[in-house]
Length: 347
Image (cartoon, rainbow, N blue to C red):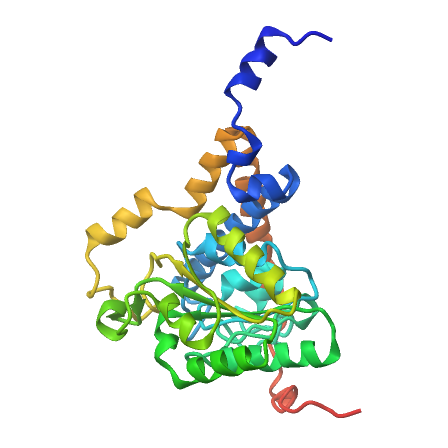
């Protein structure tokens, strides 16, 4: 059948498959739209959590990753449900990218029994072993050696699992970082170290705290690949993750990925952002936003139109609203259950 004039024009203007960014060559439309949904879910979850905190529904503090959605989603995109991650105090995005239910996450924030840790963990300690999430950690760099232990288990038991260790730029100056990378390389463990470098360890810039120009520059000292990617471009992050995951599955050992990204909010809710300029924050928000970039690409390559993108946003808005309501209506722990979930009962 002869091509119509419109079809000919489309074929002439369509980019060659080999020139497409990585994710458009390796994932179909349904997978890409799900990635967009999860990125919106991460952002709207954190916006909902922030609003709930301001209304007095959540106590304590929280560390938001708004602006870092492409890093979490891109790293987790090549993973299976069996693969594992360790997370950080800024780990809500990692949870959602790995498949967590936002209803149970909100319940945990609200201190309710229906939360992932029965309301005992709060923002910084969510874990969900059913989706391979071994847990977030309030200790800087605390998840790195845990990931190495999980990777050692995977290698010894020949499970085929790969383990991702998320950490921030501040953790690269901790002793655990260096010890873990060395051990993982010596034993060629299937672990991938992912530094989300958002430029600041609390209020101190990486330029002032770290001797090397890039954290990935430290990888050669431990005989592993060190890759630097734009952490706000989903395809770039996913490609780096894919290559590292495949390397780990082949038994070739660990990799270090540095995602250059940015957090729009402060270090925590007590942070007044006095160490950053408004112009710097506005530049990242207005010119490098990861969700806006991905949406523009989806439209550019004919994967989605504006109406489909808005439908994703609206569906996520409803999911977030339902999650907050679920948390509000869930029961609080009873004081008689204070000692529950403190110890693991042995069979």
